[in-house]
Length: 352
Image 1 (tube, helix red, strand yellow):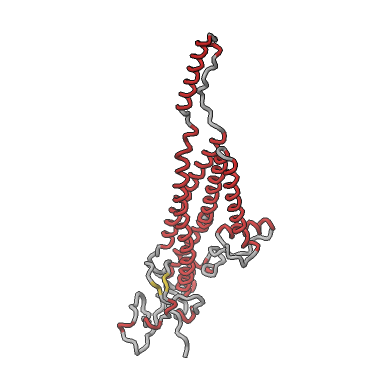
Image 2: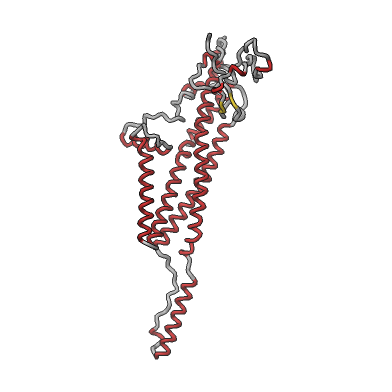
């Protein structure tokens, strides 16, 4: 007895005669027969959002390594590229799994980044709200200088000293260079963290728009999906998403440097302790990012690790031998990059 082939929403086979019509799934389109619900493998019922599903509801029949020759019926002769041909349905299944995994990874990463950037912005705002006063003239200091001058004038009159010999109070304000550096670093960190939060929010909207199901038959959906995929590559959306954590690291580093400078103006011993903690954290982050580049078994892999791997291979002059998940070498899109989506191909396959 042959095993039951895996099923997708686009494949409908004749149900078993022992199954009543109430136990079968409805026929959504075409003339293909429904399949019994109990015939769908339970482990294949999982939620995938992408091209081919209007919502995030469960989609039966998706499991890796599916034999599409058994999954879909053989197309009629000269209709291998028809509106609902097997090649388009296969492409939609593979691209849907690929898009769901990749976009879910992006959505999770951007969500965490937005939360961290928001909390970090609040912390930096507290420091900025108390430090901007260092760049403004202090009226209390000016008043103290004038009172000191008046006292010296009074003493000069009492002692018979010429008033001209009394030094004038210096009321000009010049901020300390350390204060300028501290405030500049903190405000720059604040601006970067806000920028990361805003761009991450926009990126989540880009991904949501990318995942919206287009209308039409399987061929139109496949073409629309591939058009959007190429647009993501052309406009460097993956690179933008991967660069946001780098900006967040830069913002955190600027804040730490400003805090160290500020502490050195207050207490040297405390500043040395805090500097040691930040230095250890910085070295640990660098090691965590670079360690998987030299040891593939290391699980400390992040988007920065893949970029570091590409940069390392570029410096060695060998180029990257790694296939990015969203590159044109991916099996789900490898055969659909050029002539597959031309309107004239189907006409050439039609009989004369």
